[in-house]
Length: 554
Ligand code: CTP
Ligand code: MG
Image (cartoon, rainbow, N blue to C red; front, side, top):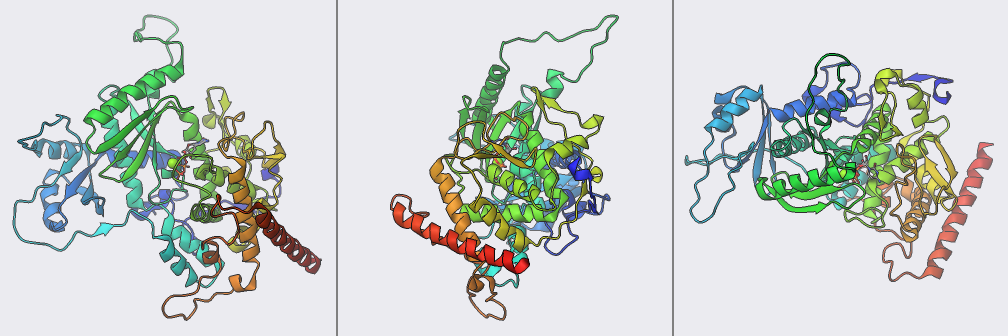
């Protein structure tokens, strides 16, 4: 097994061990120090879900006294954690010591009196604080829930002294904060209370970038309605004696069951869910979903059911991000770069998705010499019996115990990785080859598609099936331009050191400025001949630089 040979470096806890290392959700805030070693994905999920179950969301008036507010609430029990944030008004997330405290709090709440409207009599843990006393207090201290605007980020990066520091600084600015992560689990928990009207034993879990360690403040909230405890897949029936089983309605298609469950829950969210607006049922998609906005949190939500493979890919991404701090830093940087140049978009379409981009970064890191992260096949070989997982015939087994993973010694700097990432994809043979993180190798494309990235678990699927050739061309052209820019001495020289006011962008900040590549920005105004000439000359200059580098190396 490739990754077991020539082992020189064992896994070390990534967060907080190096300057600029990414704070991970498993090691955030007061949670750090509770445990040695990184939290497994399951521990992280279980802890956050438990906190969410004991939490309430309260709309407050900004000029409420924090002290009075906490005194008032602590009549119902000890408050373990609280914070405020702003989203069309100020909200508080309050976690109590136990679930009974929440019950007591809810019992004390009144039904609002309305004169000209009618109310849907659905009670939830989303409340409003009424303040009848007079007197003004200072504004409540709000935690930011959005990222810095791009221009501010460019200024911030320009003041750093190295590209490595720029990358770390970008990561710190963009990653989810502990509070935002808690809020995401709380929204899932509030929705679970609605779904529980039909399925009392269900849970709703976040997946995707909310929990995979690559989420940016403001990213959507992907949720998965988990009914596995009810569908009884894991229950054994006794072989002798009497036993009972539930009578259940049967249909001939699992997809149909998923669609009807989501349809009913979608209706329920639409009609009864406090704060849930703009509900759309998208049930004919490959993965049926209900999409809506949760106003009090400001999250765009996608609720799916029967989506356990996506949960596994979330866990895999989390694991890769935990293995080496460079993984998250590079992913955040590439995602930010891609978003700035319109390579990715919040609107669904023929663009490259963040998920595809992340897999592209992982693939690139597997191809380093020595590799920075192991292949999925390698993680599969390290798995123990408890890690076995086969979902709808797909092998989703991989090791969950991080300590079993031994990494090779690779000392590449972030700057080097960033430059080489752009060069790697500027010259990748996309027309013939498919990216495969299971094998850590490119393979002949099994089907025609401009960009082919094998889905790590559903291996017959292409993660980037939606991408058209013009979007891929833009990506490649921008990789070429960015690789070229990073090799120019004026880009590579810090300008901000000692600067007083605005600083001239340099390094990574230069890459986030509007692109110079003709045809990349305004596709309609594109002049193909001119653009290809420019790209050709960029490539030429890249090649000659590389040759120079190789010659000087040898
Ligand atoms: N997913 C997948 N195959 C795809 C698209 C998505 O398996 N073709 C899974 C991945 O686990 C992904 C999750 O669904 O992480 C959520 O998808 P999406 O919201 O598109 O991506 P995120 O990773 O959440 O990134 P973003 O911040 O853009 O939402
Ligand atoms: Mg998402």
